[in-house]
Image 1 (cartoon, helix red, strand yellow):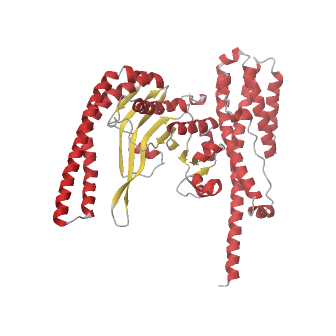
Image 2 (cartoon, helix red, strand yellow):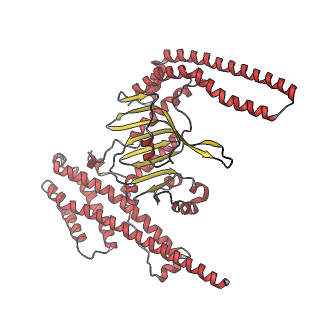
Image 3 (cartoon, one colour):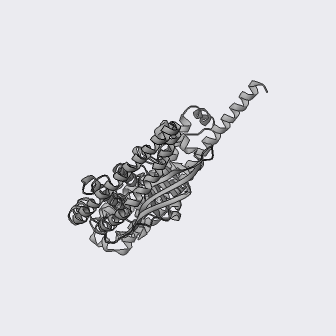
Amino acid sequence: MKTLSQLTDFYYKELYPQLQDLDKRRKEIRFKIVLTSAFTLLIFAIILAFITKAYGFSFDLLFIGGALVSILFPLLYKFYTKEYTKTFKNRIITPLIQELSQRLSYTTSAYIPESVFMQSEIFQRPDRYRGNDYIKGIIDGVSLQFSDIHAEKKVKDSKGRTSWKTLFKGLYIVSDFHKEFHGHTMVLPDSAEKLFGNFLGQFLQSKNFTKNQLVKMDNSAFEKEFVVYATDQIEARYILSHTLMQKILELRNKTQHPLSIAFVANKVHIAIHYNKDLLEPTLFRSLLEYKTAMEYIKTLIVSVGIIHELKLNEKLWSKK
Amino acid sequence: MSISLLVTIGVVIVLVLMYNSLVGKKNQVENIFASVDTMLKKRYDLIPNLVASVSKYMEHEKSLLSELTKLRAQANKPNVSDTQKIELDAKMSAALGSLMIAVEAYPDLKANENVMHLQRSLNEVEEQISAARRAYNQAVTDYNNAIEMIPTNIMAQLMRYRRKEVFEIPQNERKNVNVKELFQ
């Protein structure tokens, strides 16, 4: 597996001609979008002026206009960037992944199946489940797969209006785990203890009837950041050794986003709540910018690097 | 309904809840200790085989090997109390740790398939014991807190519940040095 600096070199050296070409297209598309938006706004303003003159001003008009823009703009964006996105993934992301490791395969439109996602039991069953950028492979003998996932639940308010609530949006990683176990152990971001403090927080967590037993861990920094539920107190500690707890904390600091982890059926499921679609081309920032490059490279390095970070490749001898 | 009756009912409910929570905590400690015990037994079962396999090679470590055998014999005696089991476990861990370091000096041992297999099993059992010890310590801490904190301490005194001892987690275990690393 390549390192961060090796991959950065590859991005700027090998992919440079492609990037330059794509960046030219990016500017054209950006120009088109800005122009179309300005034009639409102008037409809207003219219509608004006419209607106001004829019938008087109404806030409803502004509301309708706003609704139209919020529907039209994403469609417009998608329409203009479709080809650009496809080319970007074929010519930049695909070689980047190949360079990272030859043993990885990449499919832009596929994603982690919902059945696998549901196995973790971290989230409720979603009503709408989408994803892309599916990467799969074997690193150091450990099988790994990950993709972008957006899982949503349909909610109805008191007036009967439906809207979509995001259950999870971010990177979903599934990998082999190096220890054998039979139960279910879940590590979730700790909101109760942060909100109510140690004592009351733990009390509330232990009264959570939808989850398994609360497991109090003997690492205070870990316990502050996460809450653990498991079917078996001993097994949870067998899985979450002191080293692994430390590694999970480091991963949390590295990603700077909340983490939910489940250990089930000899696999580890890691959900990183990035809250955005990753590995997408930028439109309003140059592809050649260091920050942009780092975003793609770091996403890949963090996901694939999890095997080394969490030492999933160091199998216990009995599991050989 | 008179107020005094309501208060009495309230007090009775609180007392029942306190009683049940204490019994629950005591049983949790006992349950987990039973698992710890099972795993400790698993480790003791590996000892005779290990001693037999390495004794041919380890001429200078005879006292260490006899110490292991002695500890195992003590643990297998009937009527060993929980406190004694905890003490024996600490001694056993220390003795096994020394043995693993001593093995370093014998290259022949590393080539022996049987010894390697035993080390693998031992490593696995050690990890399980470590997890069980940590689970036990947490259950004991919860139990000890309950019998010392107001208001459950009064009830605990009436029930004659006593503080329980926790396992000393060896310093090297905190750092998670595993047996495997010692052989590399």
